[in-house]
Image 1 (cartoon, helix red, strand yellow):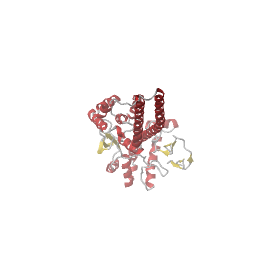
Image 2 (image 1 turned 180 degrees about the horizontal axis):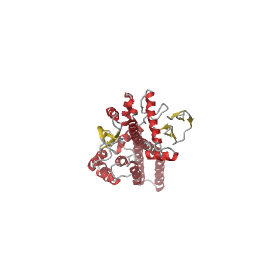
Image 3 (image 1 turned 90 degrees about the horizontal axis):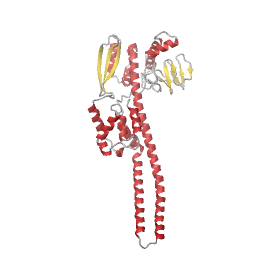
Image 4 (image 1 turned 180 degrees about the vertical axis):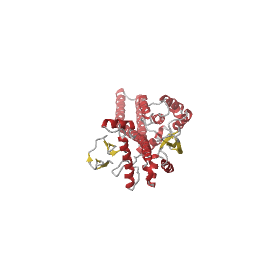
Length: 392
């Protein structure tokens, strides 16, 4: 099986070659220094279907294009998947969550077991650690100081104008001196204010970037878990798991989300039937794993894994109530300026469940909306955030 060795790919026959980005080597795709599992599009690939198995239809088309017999590629990939399991077991480490390595093929990374991402919570953590509270306080203090200096200057000018003993020339000179002193002080204050606002903008951009990485990592983890489950089905169907060690089963449980008892049961039943495992998830994220006889479609067993899914739908009432609850927990004092604010975060979180119009409507009805009124963010930016997150 192809492996990465010192930046090169070592193929089955032992030859070392310099890989091409996106190229396939012994059934594994090379992207950014890593090889995917056999027959799987590399999770880091920019092409559609990243992290998923290449369909049988595409493999049949490749058979035809390469002059193979129909099904040759599928048979080859099945042998490579068996080799992946055998290589991991022979190495004494079992199937690990380390991805495809030079030590032998493994199930992919990313099976962290996390059911979802709380963007508001993550944003608050990043905000607290960034120093934004101190920066914002300095900006407020400096703005208050500027206002005080302007009021003091206005007061002194008024006193000069009200002095009946001053000539016009003396009055003009006194006022000019007051204004010159004010302008000198404000020039320095404005420079400091510009510097602080630049720091705030940079920190906000940094928080935005880190939040984006967090959500991308969640999607990668989710795709990898789906990839691992598909590979598990393939290994189960081929009988490759009959000799799996306890450590193998433990790693499989972590990487696929399947309970160990369920994996053991599935392997046992695979002796008597050609089975396939399917996962179903209800609107609240409750996951059930079902073992089917692939020939008859009969359900052989099913086991509930509890609320480990993200949940994709919900009743209008429950989603609306959750929105109201989330809106009530955010305060302007704990939210930085920019698109990572109170309303943009609500848009990001509820894009999969509500239309943008419903989000606006529910925001205005919430205590947050009643306190601050119509969101001040640019509608174009809000629409971009909504479009980005509505598929999550």
